[in-house]
Amino acid sequence: MDMNEIKELYQKYVLPTYTRQDLCLVKGDGIWVEDAGGKKYLDFFPGWAVSGTGHRHPRVVRRIAEQLERILHVSNNYYNDVQPLLAKKIVEHSFQGKVFFANSGAEANEGAIKLARRYGNPDRYEIITMEKSFHGRTLATLTATGQDKVKEGFSPLPEGFKHVPFNDIDAFTDAVTDKTAAVIIEPIQGEGGINVADEMYMRDLSCACRRKDILLIVDEVQTCMGRTGEMFAYKHFGIEPDAMTLAKSLGGGLPIGALVVNKKFVDVLKAGSHASTFGGSPIVCAAALGVFEAIEEDDLLENVAEMSEYLITRLNELKEKHPVIKMVKGKGLMIGVELDIEDAAGIVGACMKEGLLINCAQKNILRIMPPITVTKKNVDAAIEKFSKVLKKI
Ligand SMILES: *Cc1c(COP(=O)(O)O)cnc(C)c1O
Image (cartoon, rainbow, N blue to C red; front, side):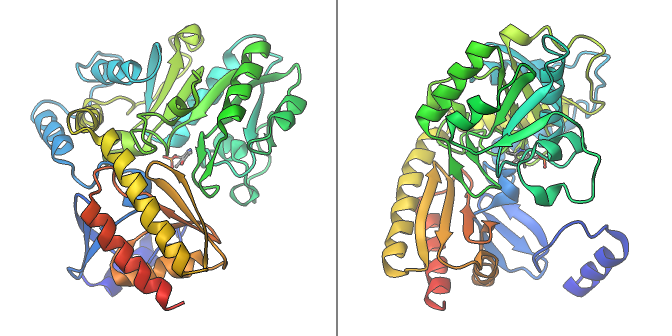
């Protein structure tokens, strides 16, 4: 099929909820993807970080292939022999607690919201989230999201959500009332434009939550699985959350979400209180075990540290030459390039023509999140392409 036929089918049969780039990807291998015409691209934004260990990572593919020979789906009224191994792995890499499996980031956050609503006194139902945050597109998670554009036309929205400025502890403590049940925060805001939480802020937030018995929930849907240099980003801050939500990179390309609940709160969601038909199916859990295996066995966290330093250095070199770049920010391989112009989308399109895939998080912010398997050679190739685009501005 050629591009025109594909686009025609979309126009006829697929709801137009997305703004799509003029690109149809048909193959992926590591950091490389290929379009329908056979052109190759260096993927520095692999599926919104879903293919965080690269496309079709061999360890992920092997685990999926092994599971394909056994069974694809087991419903949750039975046991399966993969789900608990993944839960154990997640807990061993985070904090003592238990895991609920869902299929996406929004669903993991829905679970977290239900946990907060159910915990303690029923009068306590308010959830505080951050301005510019993003937590998903279901009715509750879009209400939790601190950006008006996702809410337009969907009223009435569920009650009990309020937003405060990010990195402002006074705004948080002022917003707390007797009704506050939880706070949900991304340790690094992704959609909001790669905004990193201050270390002191996260610690103060954690203390404020402890004092008032408010659940501290970290949304690690985008930051999980080594993206920032730690398996989970909250670890940079010396805090322990009461719950954490995961998705995107966790499944190495397959859809999975997870709500990880600290041991203190594992009795809140009892049998019958929450469920998901597809949640924790053995095939997606096998893929996620492959992701953990890759990170552990191939020392990918070390690679993130090294490549982060190298990529940020190279981007800062470009900044010296091109005043259109105002600032390079972020942590690990979750990087934002703040521009002096409001045409990040135009630059993303120009990079695509050069064979480099990146993203724009806000009008003036480019988002760069290569697979955590990225090499120096890949970085050099990407910088060369990006530099060509910058020269034309
Ligand atoms: C992508 C994202 C979500 C939503 O995940 P879906 O899988 O699209 O539902 C939630 N929170 C954060 C921080 C995200 O980046």
